[in-house]
Length: 392
Ligand SMILES: *Cc1c(COP(=O)(O)O)cnc(C)c1O
Image (tube, rainbow, N blue to C red; front, top):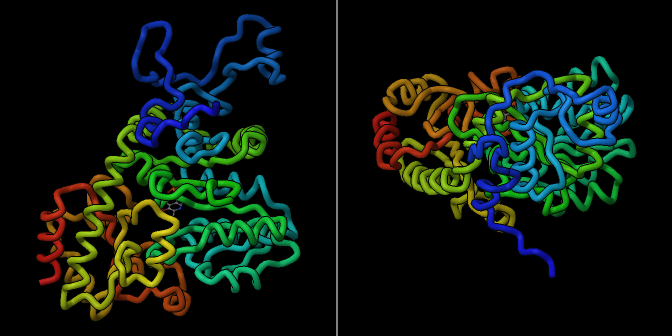
């Protein structure tokens, strides 16, 4: 009989965790060490040859980091995971490890700015082609696939408009064309969306956001097949080298234990906030996948377990009016990043998307009146009171 898989919250707490044998420590300690001692030359040689398990040097693996990797693999329902020192570390390791010059990467338009910057660098310096497509429309995706397309790289929902891609349909397309599908699952976390179960080959995260959840670290992670993760560990993790440190790994292991209850609160608060904004006379439109009025509400219901903690909204006017609103907020902080316990608000046109040319921004649906709010886990009445103050 197949063993029944434990529930998500149970896995988040127990997956990979073993009581430390020497002291009985419940939590896995911070193994603050760069290197690991071998018993003998033979022991070292066997570990280097991969004939014997065990740690060698913390860039290649560290017990505190390994626990985080095991937890993330279990939560995403993948075979193995690799931890990195940032989300961009994970994204660049995957791209560099999976693409060659002359090949093509198809991406969702409106990509995270630094992922876009990486693609430009790969193109200009290494001859990798890429193009951007509106991933809401499978026909457009199918038409944009080229004979040399080896990777499809998707963020869904995307920042800050929360447009979504149908992961089941796009993974089918990827398979038909012998391309690998990478999904950036930062906005949803494995609690709300599990791309590997829908046919994706790889998942990446900025663990800086909900996975850590407390705004106190920078980290990244990739999940996929054991074969590919082993290969990437020996190449773009080992030789490019953005390895995660044990202190950050400890905080991530701690953060993961409360991921499900934090996400439940983020989602409940965000829905309340979205409903409040929808009724406010100064608000022109609200982008939140959990609103029945959202263009892709149906897809969200099929693909997501809940709708996440990010709400974007558009007000009458532009940058001046946005400044009038957000400068008056008392509790909600003006800051980029997202997924923290604290509510954070930002203005894409002058902040996260300032480098995108205005006409490209407009085509992506990012006007000067658009505001993005990462709804925190404070009492929702206090979040709404603060927004009311700003919108007066
Ligand atoms: C923040 C973010 C990244 C980059 O992650 P870092 O941890 O800052 O390197 C990538 N993708 C998305 C969707 C993000 O929000």
